[in-house]
Length: 314
Ligand code: SF4
Image 1 (tube, helix red, strand yellow):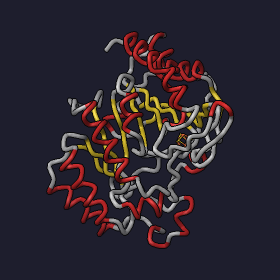
Image 2 (tube, protein in one colour):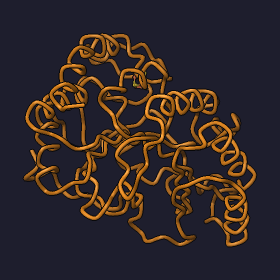
Image 3 (cartoon, helix red, strand yellow):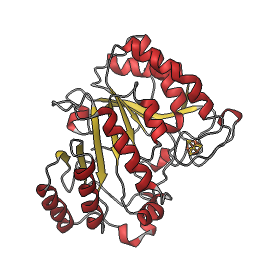
Image 4 (tube, protein in one colour):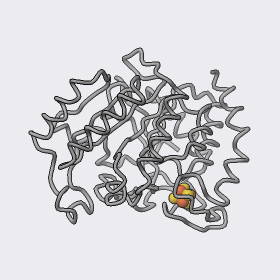
């Protein structure tokens, strides 16, 4: 689809999106707070969009970062406050720079000028009306890159439906398939049910269009292997192979006990070599395609440990 057509389709949806956050149900938390009036819900986000950082990211999956890097924009705040979150400094707070939709469009266009392979929106849903507005503006001003929606996977089907015309690639997590784990580590016992509905919708919408080396359309499902949770990972991989077999899989072993994980003894360590081998042996039995990290990946792989300023981008 031509960028200008994308812009028109997005603009048609803006009034309904801005209405959604007057009684906010942008995400499955359904807080029903009046965000334009300054009320805040679970994610803490209010009337303004906040970005923590934006840069060319070379540590995403090879099919996302490509050679020149993924034009990654990290939004502050999150609707899923995981106890082991590696980005807790800005995802559990709203630390960052307040920006308008116009600013966001400028950032995207600058990242394109710098050679980005795509625009990668990280944890965006709680700012969706402004983001869609920014995307429409950027498309009208010449943005022609694939749009990657990088999400915890805790999304409503309605939101995924709204995203269909704007997004090319879903880079979505599947964190747990067991409700008690969703409750213990992410305060979301409904995570498995909600996540699986959203993933199926993303899969139906974007299908499998992987031709390599870059992912230009489709669904990439990320799973972070947690220590002591090999059986959970086996269930996750089984679910993927039975429900979204053509999706690309990104298996991550970079877990470290960040943030509050020290308070949960069972996850207060890294994944062991034995656990890594068991997961990789099981993966070998399945007919899935994608990427798997080494047990000790480079520090900056698929994460953010530094904060380039927005200077020169806005
Ligand atoms: S986006 Fe934030 S305020 Fe809106 S429903 Fe989700 S958590 Fe609640």
